[in-house]
Structures are given as C-alpha cells and as structure tokens.
Image 1 (cartoon, one colour):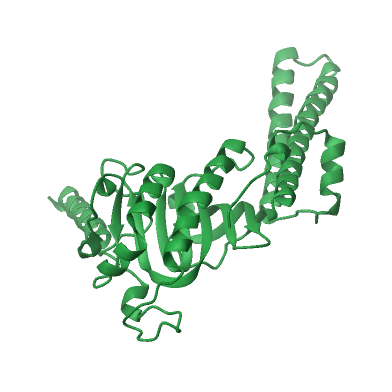
Image 2 (tube, helix red, strand yellow):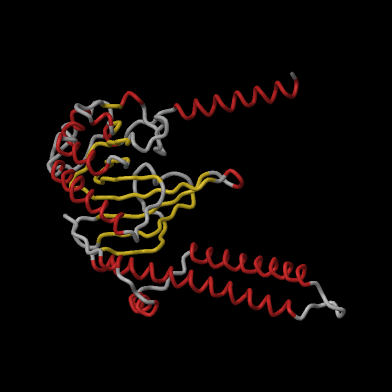
Length: 338
C-alpha cells in the first residue's frame, strides 16, 4: 500500500509541443466545465470589444463623415490582445493538464481533469446539487486510493452557494462502525465546519491530548470498537500528519476532508498526501484488518450491525434556523402592524 511518489513530472519545465505529445493518447476533454469556460471567455471578449470600442469613440471622437478611421484599427488591436491572452490561458491549462497526466502515469494513478460526483457514502457526498470533481486521481493497481477536489451547490438563484472540498479516500479490508473525527484546528470559534451534525451523546472522549485535536463521534454502544480501531499509535499519527483535516470511517472506507480546493499540481500537496497514506492509512489498514462486530455473531461475515453503521444526526440546526425564522417573522409582524 505504501506510496513512493515520483515528483519530477510536476517540477519539469515542458513546452506546449511536449504537452501536446503527452496528451496525444488522452481523450479530448469537452466537459460541461470546459464549455462553460469557453462561453465565459466569449462573453468577456464581446464585452471587452464593446467597452473598448466605446472608449475609443469617446476618446478620439468622430470626423466630419461620422466615423473615426482609427477606431477599427484600435479595435482590431484590442481583439488581437484579447486573443493572445486567451491563447496563453489555454496553453498554460494544457501544460498543467499534461504535467498532471504525466505525474499520474508515473505513479500508478488514473487522472481525470473533471468528472461527475463519485457514489460514496461519506458526509460531503450526498449534499446539494450540481456535484462534480476536478483533478481526480484514482489508483489503478494495489489498494484503491482516490484523491480529488469536490464541489457541490446548495440553494438556487441569488441564494445559491458553492461548497468546495478536498477529499482523500483509502479503501480498507473490513467494514467498520461509523466514526467521525472533527478536527478542532479547522473550526471557527468552536463551530464545526462539517457539512453534517451529529448527536452529542455520541461524543467519545479519549485519553491523552487527542481531545485537544479532534472531537470523536461513534455510535452508542460502539465505544469499545472505536477504542479498538483508534489505538494509541494511530491516534498519534493522526495528530502528527492529519490534524488539520476531518476524518471519517464509514463502511470499508477511510476519508479525509478539508474545506476548499487543493492545488494538485503542487508537489507540497502530494508530499502531504504521501505522508498521510504512508502513516495514517497504513496504520488504519493494519489495525482494522481483523476487526469483526461481535453483534453480528460471525466474523466470517464482513458486516456491521445496523445500529453501528451510521451515526445519528443532530436536529440542532433545524431548531436554530427555525428560531431565526420565527424571530424574523415576529419582527416583520411588529414592523407591519406594531
């Protein structure tokens, strides 16, 4: 399972011709995102020409015939400048894609610049709409590992919000109870950044300094199982290598999440990923490869009893936003009829 990455494709200086050669065996990407970018560039280009034409006309005015001969020349120069800008943006995008493709091939991954959302059960994957991934790396041989940026949207119209996440998935050998470790380092004023909330009676306090770094949730009655999974060595590795990420174990998968998108063309990002896999990932697999839920009664069955498969959610967000709505409605009534 251990990762030993070759970073040279990410640090190499390649030309546009070399990028084209690297991508020659790759399918041409015409994703919705790509088309959207083309449309945006087209709209910006037309707006640029319209504004530029108006500026030239206002600056130089018109001659007696009603037109200034400099206007079409300057507009043409503006169009050339915009075309050069588009060319460099497109070329740099192709070079980046070529480097990531080369890096993936050198390290046993399949790389996709953009895909639809994966069908995972983790807490970030079932939310909102318009779900998609970008710069997705899936390990081809050996233990499945999936690394990607992930996006989904909530709301609509003016109230629409875009949510960006980075995730890493490492597949385990056994199904495990649902465990969530909320990193305290990425919370804001003790408010969790997790896209899901869990009942507080599922919080398990652990020994040592672990509680200073993570808040641990496990299903009621599975405290002993959680302590089995999170042995002292694994807890220490999580603190050392993953204390800025939220961690979820669900079914036979280990997820690490971080808000925002990671630059997967940066060797530093992959150095972090490599360290997490080789420490947290390796120890999690080693510690859980013999796990069996006593409630099932047969360790040959790789399953967790229903009560341990999912954490119970909390209703406090419903109460909180309901209270805000009620206060807002009361203030509206007071302003209208008070």
